[in-house]
Image (cartoon, rainbow, N blue to C red):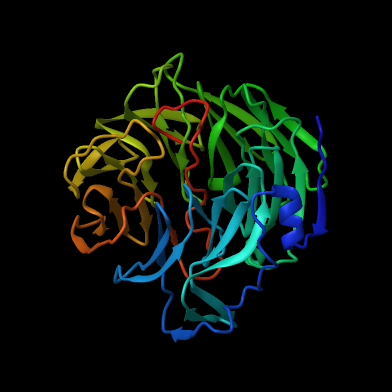
Length: 427
């Protein structure tokens, strides 16, 4: 096991990116302040924004009006993740994790905050990675995992746009499609495995010393942080829970029951996961509800197929956007679908995971749904079921993230990241 944990000042210059990634040569990144040429407007309240990837770039929309406020051209298939600071997102590019300024933010001022907006912009700031993978934001810290090397970089979310950010680094024994999560006391939970087989997790203290480990998580993939800082990770036969120095295995009800995508809200004991009982990767029609308090798992039949971009939660409910065009609202107390919301026409799940398909993100009582077939985005009141706004797009949307424009926001945690080794139509 190669394990090094350090804190160092890293200058992400053009030369460093060229040497480490050899795919592009971005120059020194700007500070967190907007570019001098960009006009800045002070706002009365926070202005959440949506960032939508498409074939050729990223469009940024005002989450209230759904008007396009910016369009950033960038070639290649783009993955996008919230950076955890309420303002920035990270794009997976050939050079690594490149910082996108979504253009709305808050600045604390005593017992209140001031809110600002400017034009979105792609910064000349990239965190080098051979194969950029998962991004996890938790408790003001953001962890980046390089699938190509197994290298982990963790930094303050508030410093993600600073070119000389103070970072913590760790290297796993072997490169693999992995993930890392740093907790509030500096504990680092990181996956283990190789390119051929992922097996479990290792937990390190703030100095990088091993605390505990488990190899009881075949195909480990997907993570979230729930109540009591419980880290939940998906396995091909259940989930692993880590909390307070202890790792607990929760078995799936089937001999093979793969969970590879997980959603929760910090402070909630409810965790939503996809569920696939077919080793050959059948259609996803059930979801798993995991209770981190008692370690229970319940399955809910959706009655329709969904994909890895279909899952969302708030503090009280779980939501699944299915190919019947409906948002299925799950009551976790009864472990069943309580009601459905008609949103889209029926749609077919693409065979290729990179192809656009409807996606769902939730923020402040609204579900934002992309409709690639009709090139539009919709805003749905999740309580009433009313579609209170929709907008036509000039592009076909693929991935979607929301940045809150507010202070100290994790923006819903990690974004989906497809598991290339095991294509179940999920991440």
